[in-house]
Amino acid sequence: MRPKNIITNNVVLGIPAFMASTLVMGVPFVMSSNLPLAKSKSQSQNIVFILADDLGWTDLGCYGSTFYETPNIDKIAATGMKFTAGYAASPVSSPTRASILTGKYPARLHLTNWLHGKIKKQLIGASYVPALSLHEITIAETLKKHNYTTFFAGKWHLGAEKYWPEYQGFDVNIGGCDWGGPYGGKNYFSPYANPRLTDGPKGEHLPDRLAEETVQFIQSNRDKPFFAYLSFYSVHTPLMARKDLEEKYSIKKEQKAPKTSWGKEGEYKVRKTQNDAVYAGMVEAMDQAVGKVLVELDKQGLTDKTIVVFMSDNGGMSTCAGYPTSNIPLRAGKGWLYEGGVREPFIIKWPGVTPPGSTCDVPVISTDFYPTLLEMTDLPFQHDQHLDGISLVPLLKNKGEISRDAIYWHFPHYSPQGGTPSAAVRVDNYKLIEFFEDNHVELYDLKQDIGELKDISKNRPRMTSKLKDMLHLWLKQVDAKMVIKNNEYKEPKKQNYFLKLIKRLKAKVLSF
Image (cartoon, rainbow, N blue to C red):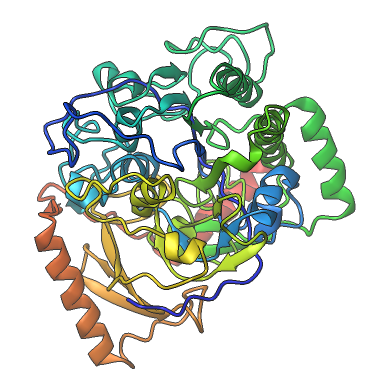
């Protein structure tokens, strides 16, 4: 795919940064570890990678939200480049996180579901590995071999203890374990009962604590190159905010927010308005934590020497678990291969190179970070590793295009949010989704229909056939694991409408 590179004013990316610990992997390494590593002119460039959890595409001010307040992340965008078509490699967390670290599609890694999710219906989801393999050479390991100190703070969710950050290239691991959310202790408030995070004072807030740990790491390593991966647990469930912020947004909801409205996505209802006070408080608390890290870079005189990235691991939760946010104009949300599930806030700030406040609408994906960060820091590519990533440096410099035939997704699972086993491909502005329950396909022109409201597969049979063939060939090339039929599944009986009505009337009579 060779879409036209349209870059104007843009935003900066904040992506998790504080990765630590080194691993010797079985994958060939381009540069021999026995040879001295030359220090390049750009090696003083630090990296802060900030990753949000379950944050939707429109959950930031710089991406259009008028209810949530995110001045610090907006500042990254205002000083860097905002990608309007930035994608996660999966609609759920663990696979996307693996794609960032390895530069490989989840289908190639055989890590296609959140760990450890398994829902059976008429299909049984594809088998998948229970962790990020230690044979993968992560971006943290590569940077560590080139004299970077690596740090990780926050959510890991890529396997049991022997697969934690300290065994995947991070020198420091603060709070990273097998948890998919802050499920110990008092959740987002200390005590945390987290095996990799000591409890703070009673009532300490988790986003602030992770930011403070990141600040301390920056202070201790200000004189040498570092890679800090700040991977927030926010804004994943459980939904809980600081009381001051919840009160602030409760007032704002009454005064300024539109009334809650709902739509339908399959059998699931979907939220169409952003006005949840608790969720808004969670978003702002995360933004304040990001601000604390940015202020520390200023204090240490490192702002002009530090690349900052910001992204979310999948779309916002709009169809389940409290329905806290809306991804409108995108369709659906977390757990779905529609745009609401995979299109994300995607921001990169490269001081002195990327035009401040620029915007790029070329489709990019989370596998691209690995080769992009290597080229940005003048380090050699690891071609045997980041097989599915493309360096975005030509876009960031506003001096060229990238060459890519297509972007692919494979999610052969049922999600708790209502998504069904499916796979998808985007070529230029066209996106095709194949649903494995009945193998029907849907085709959308995202330029004309970003909300994926009009399926044009019947109107464009040649394009539909072309993309379907490309998708099937790719699935074979990466040895994608597929669903199997569940012979024990029985279709739930549909209740007669009139019987339902009679039951409701009886219930009303009995309530008097």
